[in-house]
Image 1 (cartoon, rainbow, N blue to C red):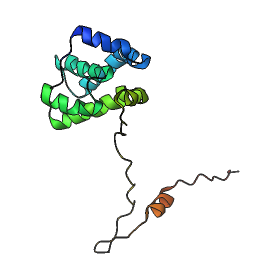
Image 2 (image 1 turned 90 degrees about the vertical axis):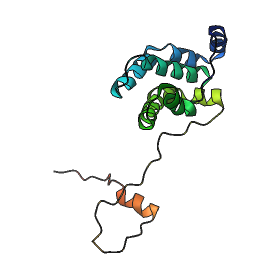
Image 3 (image 1 turned 180 degrees about the vertical axis):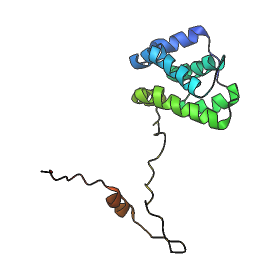
Length: 153
């Protein structure tokens, strides 16, 4: 359970924050993003304000971003899949735009949401045929788009 802070403690922390975080905490865009994320994921009632509170704790520097999902699961009783999806959207729409400031505040590197995946081959191998080994360089070369175009007269 995240530590509870008094209003005075939070206010003192707020005064020491970088300007970008101060703006994000009281930003209408942040509030809209939280509301939209909750609405998209069918989260209603007082859980929206609780999610906003935990997002605020991250922006204040008292709840590390990588603990948000666990907190939503434990404190709000969200299922793992839902908590993960909500956390990913919060990271994308709220934390990512201020990523450098959050990294400095927590002295951590915030990882991208997902690793880029290799594009699978577009053709199916013949049934019973051995798999074709393709090096990463060949895969990249094969999937590059041809940017050369001739003019049509």
